Length: 318
Image (cartoon, rainbow, N blue to C red; front, side, top):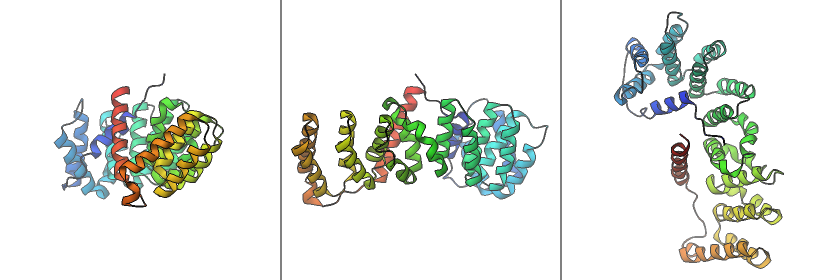
């Protein structure tokens, strides 16, 4: 059974980014000392130290980048210092550091240090960083490492990664959360790609595509395709998933009621007929039709549910 494996360097970067909202100013040399101070900690640095470091890097990122690159080339730097410089370059987010990070990634033999370089490139973003991460993905065979790289690319919203994501869609429904993590991070950019997978010949691809579109992204533009797939789908569980997704993706209550009524009249599966009847009852009880002919899709609600799922998976798989 595959266990979730989250990129350690990337996770540490995300931890530090939690402190970004605070404001602070610092000279480049003082900031460089703070960066090098990271190497003195055996575990997680104190929260105030991280907050001060992030703010200092952001306040003087332009001047600091050149100094960090110079230190990265210094052969006298320790491994811990080099890791700290790479992390700081990512937080500085200056594109001129991309070439140097790519060089270091190619030359180092340390897998951990390679992960730090990729995490820094992801933070900087841009096409060059994204394309390099894609090249690393294409050269990687290990499934867990590929998943980590795909999630980093999704965090960057690098659309060129979408064709490679089919391997996630092919996973059994037990791993549905991997599709949610990837396509949830990619956001609306993933919708056109997922629409082409609703009628895929692979049942897992169909199921995961409908789950993400209908249960997480709440993509109203997917309603017609999901409805069409419902009527030609052979898998009963997937048909129920499609019907449930139509509840979320058809904002017009009158149209949704019409779809459900058709199911009640034409459907031969008694469970699906019962599902449609209960859905109509829910519409009546909530008095949605009386209050408004439209229902709102909430991006805030998605983010809350996404955070809950992420927390549950981290607690379960470590």
